[in-house]
Amino acid sequence: MISNKAKYAFRALLAIAAAPEGEAMTSSEISRRYTIPHKFLEQILLDLKKAGILDSRRGKSGGYVMLRPADTVSFGEVLRIFEGPLAPLPCLSRQSYRRCEDCVSEANCEIRREFGRSYDASRQVLDARTIGDALANTPFGTPLPLEVRRAG
Amino acid sequence: MISNKAKYAFRALLAIAAAPEGEAMTSSEISRRYTIPHKFLEQILLDLKKAGILDSRRGKSGGYVMLRPADTVSFGEVLRIFEGPLAPLPCLSRQSYRRCEDCVSEANCEIRREFGRSYDASRQVLDARTIGDALANTPFGTPLPLEVRRAG
DNA sequence: GGAGTTCCCTATTGAATAAGTAGGCATTTA
DNA sequence: TAAATGCCTACTTATTCAATAGGGAACTCC
Ligand code: FES
Ligand code: FES
Image 1 (cartoon, rainbow over the protein chains, first blue to last red):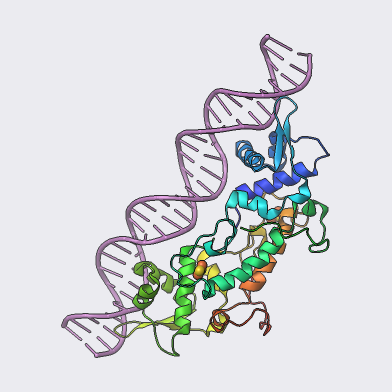
Image 2 (spheres, each protein chain N blue to C red):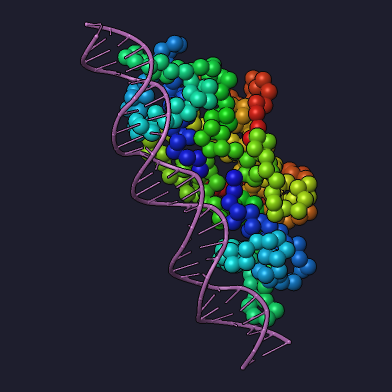
């Protein structure tokens, strides 16, 4: 199960990306519409800003807007911000690889081999699908994503 | 990341399944071979027994053996014992489905839709691949598994 | 230029989970 | 009957999750 925090982040991102071009959404507005605790949401939006996904304006008519286009922000990227590495085992993460102390040989490790298969399958989806795709409801795999965007 | 507990469970299961037919392995033996804390391992093996996967004999020449054949025990099944539902969202779990309170419409939920894709992909692997497969190192998808075995 | 609105930042809390430790009882066999 | 094994429960310690709390900084608009 993913954390509430991550789920809130997706809700917010989808809302901001769906807003009319250039129009900012306030944290209060999002908080109200989706009944997300306001102060909690503020932290989340701030994280998304620090990650270079959102931009913000302060003051009276402030709020948040997308910094990068929605179809360049993958689900995998967002998830990693809030959940850390998505890999089921440290030895399978590319971003933050760590050797498994207790496994003798990585090459012959059955656990690694099988979970590798599973992780590959889900990563294929998470790193290819973007916020933009989700909003447009484009069927998976059709436009052939630019590349598989990252790893973790 | 999966828990240590789950990883230990796989290590132990693979060892027990790999042992010569009918020959029991003791918890101490497994604990020593893979440097798993002994008392912790005992709890794990007990869970596997309660789940109907292992059988045990007590006393002097006791130990653990497989109760069911290794190629009927999927990675998904074992993982669920120790980690609970594998679904990334409560609304995607078949075993322990729970409605998402904060989502208006399940059918139109983009988050659910996208994570559903990802979950399908990984479940396909985890519920199809068995301890037996892993030991035999059979390539994935070749023998066409009996059926996709469960969901959760 | 000040009031009001918004984002920005840090600290704290309470509950749950993870990862073991600890101690002892029950059963079997040599 | 002693030694080895599994069985069961309780406890501990650290970490993470999900917020709450309280204010500071910047911006806009009268
Ligand atoms: S090497 Fe990572 S699980 Fe074995
Ligand atoms: S319905 Fe479950 S995430 Fe929206």
